[in-house]
Length: 111
Image (cartoon, helix red, strand yellow):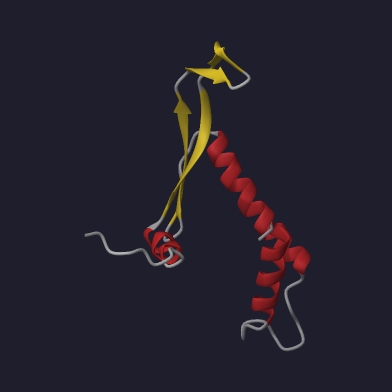
């Protein structure tokens, strides 16, 4: 699913809502600007090192990975230093975990 798919779906669903007067719908351009502004605000908060918590969805937070030594698969004898760096981590919320868990294929019970 892309950002465009999200915009189209929101515009369609809000166009069917009672709060929009008959014959009027929210334009996709308006929805796109709202979605983009939301993403920009999340990005800005993460860029400042803040945690973004979206209830029932999940938590985005910035973590710093420690420096470490890696290996080049083409030259396993050569060590490659990997510097410390900040990365974004996502922890899904309870509701998301439950919904995604439903996709798990049935597994045989442990004996």
